[in-house]
Image 1: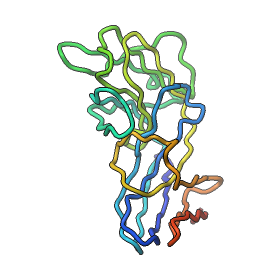
Image 2: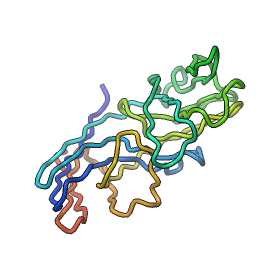
Image 3: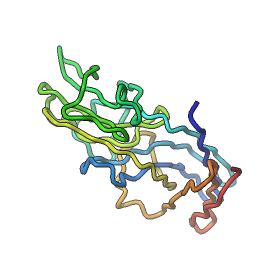
Length: 208
């Protein structure tokens, strides 16, 4: 069973806000991949929310149309993936009989451990759908699907917390997020984040 991570977040600001945990595409390997609002929850002032997850990866896709910040990614198919297993770190994506779908099958080239591979086949119509990867049953990164394209995602999870108005699966413009804080998991699997009355984040370690 995968290790469980947790982040306990307290809203001590003066307003109702959506709490949002997301990941940044650090050395992800897919240049145009966008971050998604991964874990979200509304919170009134003085309340606490605990997010939990595990390092269980997946392949995901959604028929989003043109992918851009503000669009909501709602996965229409989720397939378990494991970057450390050559039998489950690659998949094909196709459009056949009027519908998108993942297919079992090898990617092009020689897959390496530590990465997740999506082979987009010839029939994919441009600017219609989005593919990506997820963690713990929710999408983390997405990129516009294109025909005859090989995607190699090499995840290095880096967790961030922010607050504002967010919807689960929303495509984020992380360059426009100003009220954020990194949440490092160095030797611990539990962290705390408090948003104070000045809308400043205070991050601390939790119970190991």
